Each structure stands twice: as structure tokens, then as C-alpha cells.
Amino acid sequence: MEVLRIENLRAYYVTSLYGVERRVRAVDNVNLEVLENEILGIAGESGCGKSTLLKTMIGLIKPPLTVLDGKILYKFNGEEIDIISKKDEITSLKWKVFSYVPQGSMSVLNPTRKIIKTFEDLLKVHLKIEDKGEIRKISEEHLKALGLPSEVLNSYPHQLSGGMRQRVTIALSTILKPKVIIADEATTALDVVVQRGVIQLLKKIQSEFKNSIVIVTHDMGVHANIADRIVIMYAGKILEIGSARDIFKNPLHPYTKYLIESLPKIGDKSLRKSVPGAPPSLLNPPKGCRFHPRCNMAMEICKKEVPALVDVKNGHKVACFLHSKEAEIHE
Ligand code: SF4
Ligand code: MG
Image (cartoon, rainbow, N blue to C red):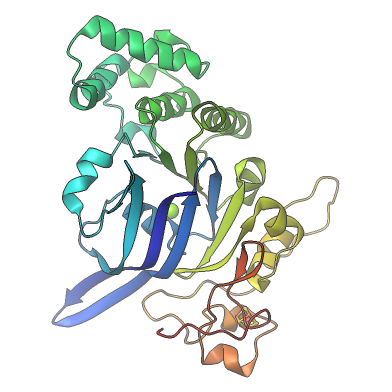
């Protein structure tokens, strides 16, 4: 069962200078489901559109970001709610149905207020609880359930380490038990040991609350540690989706193969291969398969047609003419 479905999503940055329109095609015809009870990893180099995709999932769509087409459907109370056409619903869905863990905790935690105040604000608005004692009790219990010390509630954000601040941000985003937690580079600025702690925390949340987590990071090592399924994005499009096992053991797309080969392996000191060339500009992406200028397997068709994302085996999907001749109808 899916909790969130994205259909034919096109989200561009549209600007205009001296009457000339510029369109940065950050998310270009993306289809994706988030399943119940899974950790879904979204991977890809920086500038591939993964953060933009995430922004649209949480309804953070402000100009110049413009949704030209598509739906973002959350399952809620037996209904499907499209947050693109029903923007007013976003406030009622946020925190309860989906929540967001940003890259830097300081954008959520107010530096001039103790942590408990931020918990109070959230619970007052969404649970309509006014009693401070009750708010503290709920907050403490939630922190305890996540294995975090409840004393943090009395601290100011700057009194905590970066790792603890990130964990508190995660606690805050999960206190209303949202069905989908969406995390953007939640581990990126942290050192390896702290990173491991944050990954453990996300796993614990998922196994305890049986919700879904979408984790966006360029770091394939993090995906290897946490994701059940992995989505590979490139130049605004999804190139491959599969179980973590399929992606790491049997990658099908030439780009995914490069990403996996470029990962450092224990005990292997040889230089890792990196993807040749540079990612294209999303202002004017290559025609046909967007990866073709960097692909050593490119054929004539790859320069003209856009390969469709096709299920080749048990949910393992790939958009590459080596695996299916099916093309996207509209580019
Ligand atoms: Fe390479 Fe063609 Fe496959 Fe694109 S569609 S990845 S260019 S083989
Ligand atoms: Mg990003």
C-alpha cells in the first residue's frame, strides 16, 4: 500500500528577465510512490532535482518554483488529497500526515528560546493542548521513546551539540506520529559517528511507529545503511528505482553503475572511478536520454527519444534503452 503517490510531476524554476523566460527543469515528469512502512532513499548528484522534488512533497512551492503539471497525492482518512490542487489542505496535513526534517536544525529551532518552547508551540497548535505540564509530559515521553535525554527540553539550541540538535529536530518532526517523514540531507553536515547515531534514530522511529521515511541525500553510503528502496535521480528525472539490494547488487542504469562503482570499498586502495563529465544544465538539458553525453553505451535512439521508466522485474524500474525500447510520449 502506498501512502504518497506522485504523478507526472513537473516542477520548474520559472523566471523572466527582460521579457525572456527561463525555465530550470528541476523535476521533469516524475512518477513515484512511497509505500507504507518503508525507508525510501532518493539519491543523485547535487543539482539533480532531489531537493526540489522534496520541496514539492511538503508543499513548499513558492515562486520561482512552479508546478506546471502533476499531482502529489497523500492518503489520509481513506481519501487521496492532492496538495498541488488543494493548497489549503497543506496546513492540516503537515506534522500529522507528513513532516519535514530540514538539513540544518537551526531553521526549526529558535536560537533565543528553550527547546521546550518549540515543542509547546507545535502541540498547542496541532493538539490544542494549553496545559504546560501536559505538554512537557508528552514531549518527555516522546524523547524517552526515541532514547533521547529529556533534559534537552530545558536547553537553548546552542547549548547542544550539532548531532543532538539534529536528533531533537527529528524528535520534534515526529511527535505527532506523521505517516511520512521527509528528511533532506539530514546527516550531511555531521561527522561519521554522529551520522551513525542519526541513522539509528531514524531506523528506530520507523520500526517503532511503522511510518514511512523519505531520505534525500547524495551519500550512497547512507542509503546503503538505511534505505529499503532507492530512487536514482539525474537531471530532473528518475533513472532507476529498486530495492536497496537490487540497486547495489544489480544496478541496471549506466549512471547507477557509475555511482556504485565510485563508492569506496573496504580494503580496496585503488582509485575509485567517478562519473565522467559533468551533470548537464537543467536550463537546457540534453535532448533524448539526459545522460547520453556521459554514457559510454549511448546509441542513436538515446539522442532523440526519452527512455520511459519501465518495470523490468518485480518493481525494479529503469529508464534506459538498453533495457526497454519504451519511450516517454512527451518530453
Ligand atoms: Fe545510455 Fe542510452 Fe541508456 Fe541513456 S538510454 S543510459 S544514453 S544507453
Ligand atoms: Mg540539495
